[in-house]
Image 1 (tube, rainbow, N blue to C red):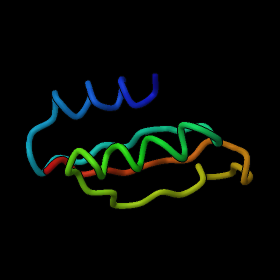
Image 2: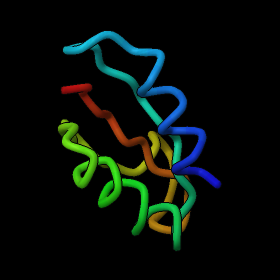
Image 3: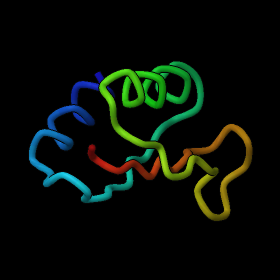
Length: 65
């Protein structure tokens, strides 16, 4: 479900625009970045949210191509 929301976000973006997506550890963290790349977009960064531990949420910064 997280990638569906991310895909809808990307569809509303202009080419070259960036967005941050908050991902929980586990399946979303594994699948969303992979799917974003497979759809031809760029991953600018993927890091734990400030103050979060390794199991906490991550911030995925992407750029629409």
